[in-house]
Amino acid sequence: MENDFEQERKAMKRNMMIIVLILLIPLMSGCTGEQKSVTGDTSVATPTAHNTNGNIQNGGLMTYDAKHLYFLILGENFGDTPGGGDKVGLYQANPDGSNTKLIGATSINNCLNVYHGAVYGVGYGGIYAVDLRTGKEKRIIACYDFLEIQMQIAGNKLYYTDGTTIYAANLNGSSKTKIVSGPAPEMVDGGSQNTLWHFAINGSDLYYTIDSYYQPGGTPKETKLYKKSLGENRQTDKGEIIYKGYHIYNIQFLGNKVYYLDLDNLDSGYNGTTSLYKNGVKLKNGSSISSYHILKDKIYFMRYDKKGNRTLIKSDLNLSQGKVLYDKIRYPIEESLCADQKSIFWYPSAESIKMLNLKTHAVKPFFDIPSEDN
Image 1: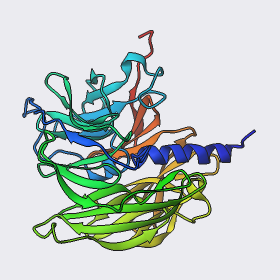
Image 2 (image 1 turned 90 degrees about the vertical axis):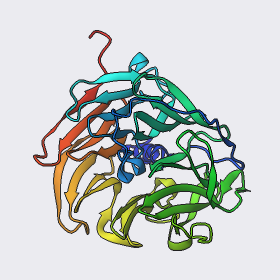
Image 3 (image 1 turned 60 degrees about the vertical axis):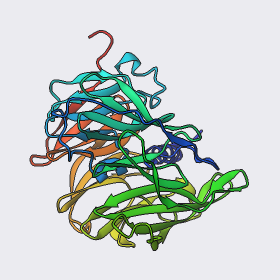
Image 4 (image 1 turned 45 degrees about the horizontal axis):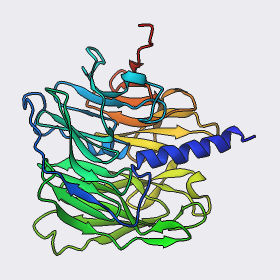
């Protein structure tokens, strides 16, 4: 029988794959813009809302605009419920959790962005947009050859990766343009390598990773983190390697400082511990961190123990002075650390959300799927 530590390592592997938004990388991609426009009440969302990079890097299960939070409830099996029944889907609520309503069932399961009256996101089969006025969903980019991709709206463009290439497109999926073409994927003992997995946008700069693998088990071999301009010289800028690691993901920024998570050693594969790095250097107290969020001049992060239990900690930007905010987060947990301007949120399960007030540090339930008796 597996002990708690072994079970947690497996759970971390699953959650890592969800958070980094890639469940299967193929040899070939197949994304096509369906060029369908999305209409909606533009007063619902502010033009600059989109989503924060921190939320996207942590799975993008929540986004917000000037009036509301929008979040996903995916059920026990992340979309394949029976767990949530007809209660799974895309929700809208006030920032304090009041006036919650189900917008509707959705194909989206990560990377939420809100823009001009529509919520965009990634799901099985492509990139989708949900009109917040009508609740109607449209697929704007079809992606058939893989399960999940990463997507983010920046400015008035939609950026996404299919595992081999990063594209920019209009918000209706038209005028797709290649931004980065990664090396051709190769098969190594039945698994792929040279996959362009994750990216993050910081101002006019694009950061992205290319991962190599070795078998057995598809365990990581090396990740290279690149930086490339999205400005006027983006066509000639081929991108430069700025850092290397074993499996770099969850890339966040504070000014020109680059933070990310990485595996501590190669031999452990996905079952190893992860640590927080800043500008290529592991932070002194950065071990055993499963997720984090940079908000203003503080870092909020989850630290896990050998049983998989989590502790939410607030710290300075070097992790030299930490304060425990909440230590009652018990395994199993879906996590998916998200934030707006006043609160930080996490999913104790796939069917519930808790929130912590950034000013008072008070913790309370934000959402629970109603029971069938209610």
